[in-house]
Length: 116
Image (cartoon, rainbow, N blue to C red):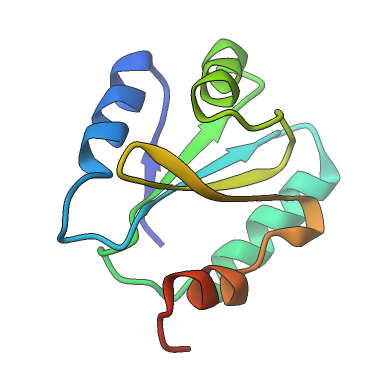
């Protein structure tokens, strides 16, 4: 699993720009609290079952350290802040989001119509 860092507004702008690329399915943002056991468990479960290639890049946001950026993401993509939280971004818009135990690789594959 190749976690990409999401730490600045510039990273977010680049992510949004890249979400328009036809060479990818979508971009994933995983918002993680390093202080929350549920978030740690969700991250571990996600990493264990992640079997996507580079066509589904995944960005990691430490929302404790970058809370302002987490809030910016919630505002820009019109999703309520959660932790842990996963967002799928395509063409500059959030097309799916889930939090806590709702975060599922199977659901992502189904949404994007990818093979298991």
